Length: 347
Image 1 (cartoon, rainbow, N blue to C red):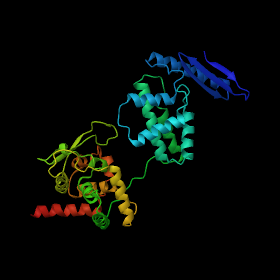
Image 2: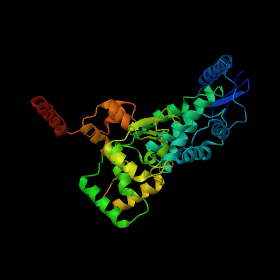
Image 3: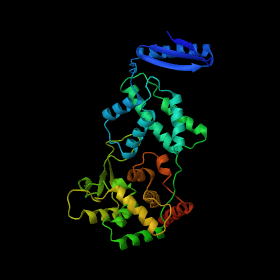
Image 4: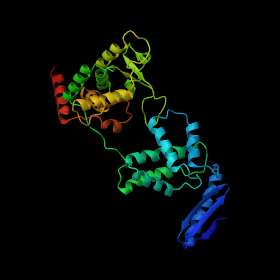
């Protein structure tokens, strides 16, 4: 049976202990406390009847995160690893049986005070949501796996943006010429000009370019397998074979030489990104990222007449909604395309 206790403040604390579960909450009125306790007790009983195990009494959020890391085998990048460490620091001491939406609202408040933006906090809660879902559906723990998602949804009601502004920045031909000239004069051990030109010829991400293996290139097509390509759902095994257009194939051949194995561009992606940023600073180019070359490349693929499925094959995008932000198709592009059609008819 639930336990109801009136506090010195006059409020009522409801406590529910059943089948290894424990929860409590405080209310202004006894009736509200009783109704909540009855609902929680019924929820506990239903959870067990539906095949869910009680949460161990002493288990904490830190215990759950540690088990998740141990059992869910995946490549934890720096961002996710740092986020999981932060979740342990901020929420790790909380007993799982007591974890509630109020804890997550306090978490959001602290993250805002620490200077985190809405996009970052939303990502934090998405990571936590994945862990809670794993606990419920894989470990069969009777835990509210929607708690973090609901907290994430609440952020927008505070007037905080949870989606980053989509960039539409592309390098101009003049900016590219300045970068190429800088790299030629710098005599760097990293061939940044060729890497940038390869990005513009393929639309690949920098880490994809630096990961291409010679063994994965089919010279007869020519085409290359991109291993574990970034995807919101498939974290591993999302391999795609994409064609190498003439400019890209020429650059690949240049850097492969006579080698039969190894990386085509055997350089660290982080180092290349740093070199790109430094070059932009040196030649006075503002607000340009290496990833902006992907925007330019994708738009160029549309401008040469490739349709959506073919551009999607090149870039790895799954849907038109994901691809549309990269197109940068201008009104004059459409008119020029119509003129080309007319000229073809006349010929």
